[in-house]
Length: 274
Image 1 (spheres, rainbow, N blue to C red):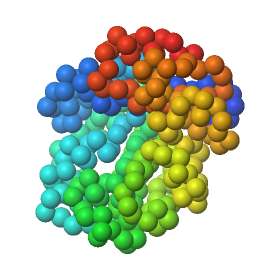
Image 2: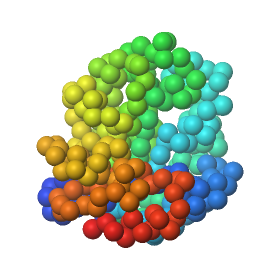
Image 3: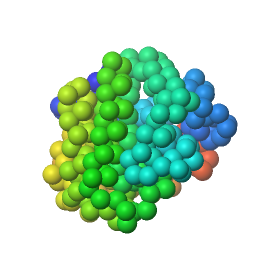
Image 4: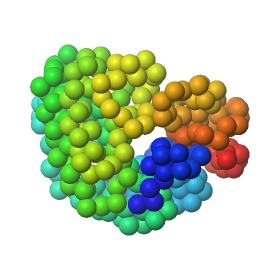
């Protein structure tokens, strides 16, 4: 792997560009093809082609998007068995293994490859579980299934794991405790462990879950400059709408590339980044 995230965290490089562009790549480079989540070479090539234009130093394999695309497989199951129902499907299993392997071999010399997971509660709800049914045992069982899945990629050049949290109505303290097994897997394999949050209010609630980096796609550049912990952000909707440009060098510039934005505008905004 290129080790770019670690270099930035260690202070060896002044800036890091980390773009989340799953939806953008699927629309612009994959033409929203129905085989995007079934044909691993199409998927891996689409992300690689998109990044030739975007120049992100980190490329993400988003398990959340794969689970969402295959949610129908979980409709007859309950609790953590919903996750197993998707992961045990031979088609899904082959897609994930082959796509991640292809990305690791194609990209590892130039960028860092990370694996992004939805939080246990977010995943359960995506697969049809009622939030009112989710307790600590269900969260713990789900995190354990996800941890076992991650271990299957330990031989590949993976740089890190991201757990994406959204407001789910589930006890954040319990979810934080359940996710400790995911942090432990990352630590065991010397992977970066990052949290992707939709709002800064979750930082305090997740303070007991050690993370190397916290990612806020909605954080403005001025807000990013004020952070006292390793944080990625700045490439918010305001930035893509011709807002302010980075002026400081010590930043992890992170954000979602809008799938609906004119590709010419995307290229112009990317070109303005340091």
